[in-house]
Length: 299
Image (cartoon, rainbow, N blue to C red):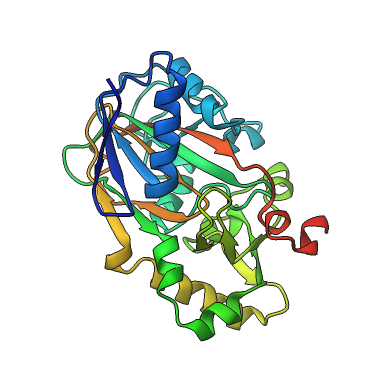
């Protein structure tokens, strides 16, 4: 039986049925999933009973996997496999993190609009988040379609953004929340990297904004003006007409295209309810500046 595709809107977010991603997939199913992903950018797969290994095996169909950023800190004990980002509020004993725990304070940055790994010179292609346990209320994830957001920009703004390069750092987004607990290894690993503000998606040909809370400066622009423009673009892209809110169910897998979406996790009572979410992240094929033919990629 072919997979079933149920669009949430004509061009953004679709639910996918009649497939068990933990089992080996045939070429036809993988091709259909990729085609849907290119069109909708966010895919929801209900009732996927993954183990960590089977989740990683499925993710490898899309490309090479990233290593969690927590690996950069030598004194951090990982709860999960190094290729899984731990988007939970649990410690290594599966207890709720204390209010002032460093990992909890760091993870609060996930509630800002962002796109995964834009702070890496080779950023993310896509992310695959699996819900193992969820709170009974709150904790949704919102997704913003940055292709539609770009299309809706005035022509004058499109011309202004053409060729602009922003600098992204994990420390920039965390500084927005007053978090600065980075050691020397992390500060070196998270030095700002250049990313284009507008990119063309090679598979669909569509143009997309590429902004995030990780962005803090723009090449050749005064800092105050750059911050104002970045905040303006994030506010534009997160208007309600571009946003879908996903209310999680246990064993949902959601895949999103980091090249052309922003997302954020919504608030929940993380001192009362457990939320165990595990994310595999696939690297893009090249730095964004290189993909858009800008020489800054070689700096």
